[in-house]
Length: 223
Image 1 (tube, rainbow, N blue to C red):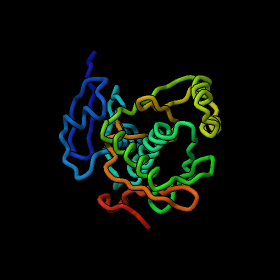
Image 2 (tube, rainbow, N blue to C red):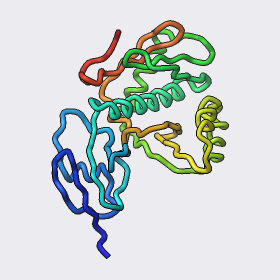
Image 3 (cartoon, one colour):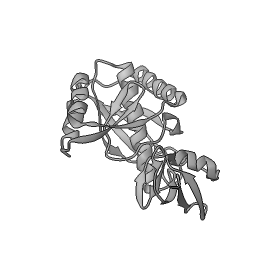
Image 4 (tube, one colour):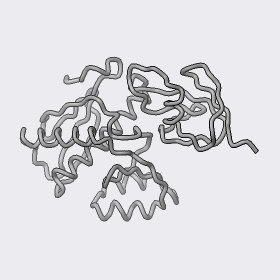
């Protein structure tokens, strides 16, 4: 029995044989695809998968970057995870809420209602950048939902428990980045270093995290 499978890459219009267990990230390196912006995820047989996804059967793959709608959502989720870790590192006694999208960025508040000072914003920005520079791997693990709820309970993440329980199932996928855990509905980038641009400023009762625009990823949306 062959231990290789056929892969069709739509980005390069090529077909090749790869060993079972090869990740999309390893395949991308083998293909040496040139692209202006880093690939964040890929369509595998028309379904979004993380680049850590491993190939065990014939597939058609198309890599996507931040300029693609789904790629942009991967960028948003990944920076949200980085922000959560940075806030936990800098303000361990405070609970952060990422309230909603605002323009092309994120509006955030702390549960205690106290707004960050300019010094606090700068400390949070610097910590986020340090996490990005460290290129922490972001790995997905499948666990019993009850075990994930137990982890969230220890951290005091009542909102995350509520989110997880909106889709009741025996097993759920949890993401881990260094000592931080998180639950997301969609794919994340392979590591924290895939975030190339962001900024922060105080806004109303909280703060605003500015992200690049999808059509111009080299430019921040500060409106």
